[in-house]
Amino acid sequence: MRLTAVVGRLGLAGVVGALALVGGSAGTSLAQGGFSATEMQLFWDIGRTPAGYNSIGQPRTGDVMEMTIEHFAEGKYADHYVIVDIEGQKGNLRQPGTFFFLYKPRLSLDKLMGRKMLPVGILGELYLAGQYSGSSNPYLRQAWCYGLSMDFAFQPNYGVSNLNVFIRDEDTQGLSYHIDYWWDQPFRIGKVDLDCKGFADLWENDSQRVFFAEPQLRVNAVTFAGPDSWIARASIGLEYEVTHNLYGYHYGWERNPGVFIAYPF
Image 1 (spheres, rainbow, N blue to C red):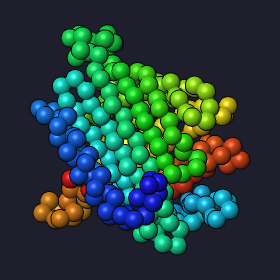
Image 2: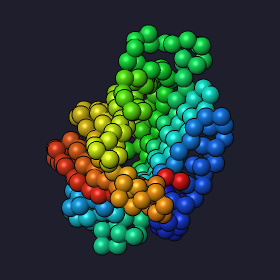
Image 3: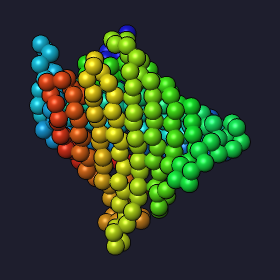
Image 4: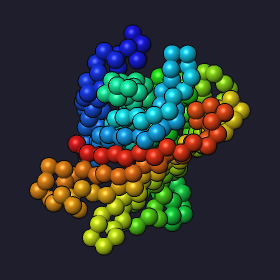
């Protein structure tokens, strides 16, 4: 059965619920004595280009509802990151339209070797890393990546970031490169707790460079809802998607804003 057929049959809530259970179970086993976190995000992308495709493959512009599950687990020697993203259909935003999946495992060379592999103060651990991504979107092709990942150790206030340098392997082209940077930086202005997080990816696809970034600015809901509110653990924020050639060479630079709410569980 095709992936899109499975998504359509289960419905948006069913798919996300099943994947959350699977991700949570996997994270529990990996993170025995370590760390595990799962978060659900609900997005409203405003006037997005493209917002899906019509029956003859032409792109559409419009609002898009999106649900994302992110899961991270860290064990003694390894960690992994999983993202599941489902976009609603235009005109029926609650009905699943497209599906994206990413899995990124890393194995710490520092912990395997018992020493610091990158003897520079601002650099953290060095990892062997891989990544698999697949999607029902025509512009996000199935790809396998493998290479090195390194954490940074210079950010204040429990901020984290890492850089991944991969060889990218797609069925539709030869080997190429894929570089991605991910960051998460909490900070405070007055009594308001904020968080700036996101990613920026650069890779080669059919002899053209593709850029894809999604920075977010979040505010913790406890700031205005109070610690006893049911929404106190949630965050609300703005996301600004910036891409170049992601949707095809004729698109060039595209900028798509959105709003979201995120809740950990």
